[in-house]
Image (cartoon, rainbow, N blue to C red):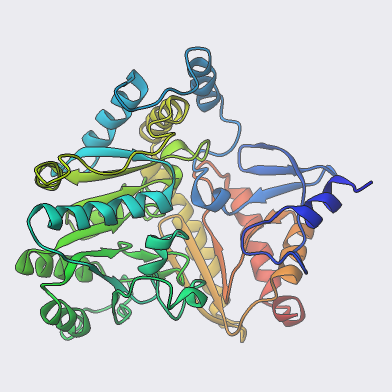
Length: 428
């Protein structure tokens, strides 16, 4: 008879984990605030916000109440031919807090599905206009999800999806954006992007990018001027612009949405992750009135997508409560305080011979080390230090819940400080 953990390792797939040599798993029994509690009684301060989603922490009474109150009314109804107050209220709020041009909302299941929906919108937009545009222009070191359309706009060589090349649609990729967020702008930085736009303007359905922060493709922060110039080029060539705000939305970078660093608005915007405060899977794709109407005027007469669990009432209700908390908890000051502590605590680590660079933006702190990390060894070390940090590649990063306390954040930083002094633990 297998124990639970033995059964787990024998039979259950985990993200990016081998079934032959699975990474260790740590059983969580409960979670509260910014802490995870393991079955063995240990407490871990969470530096990941459950992959950047649980911005209000865990077991929040207001979010719990939103789910409970909705549950006794209805857990789910199909969205085809039926509507309901939680979905209407959520869409109303999203339209209120995003750029004025984004006034139509499609509610989807997850971040990856939102990207699929956005790409389908762009393709159907051009079909409705009588043009067969079949390519997307993306950025090297970008990441947009694990489904097939999303994978096709992730970096084809420097990402976890390189083994699928040959099976995916062939898209266009501009050189990575090398000027850091606070760097000095250099003319010529847009040459690769501009050249591809000009050469392929008749084939490109849309540009798709993560604004300001490239997440799982390397946790890189780039200059806002890039976004301004890309918006200008999209306008010049009349090409749609899709922004993937799934990781950056709802305050993580210090602005409510990362596009606001550049003062631009996309034609299509994807949001997810923190949309429900990390409680349930839900995403939204927002478009301009023009995009929505052109699609609707085409041969199909509608947008051809309809997930079974679209606009799930439980998810919509908790998303509304999460947006209330964002407003009430003064996320700007929370994120600003986290940024200050991360800067003070992580910046000195650049003196380590094993650290290549430290990057901080909003409630994101990144320590890039000099070579790939031994995941199992480093994860075990962090758990022993009482923290939950999930590194990848050469990156140790923090995206803590906004409600994290200063002493908890200091514990996370101290654990990283100890780790980068131990090459035997860092690199195995």
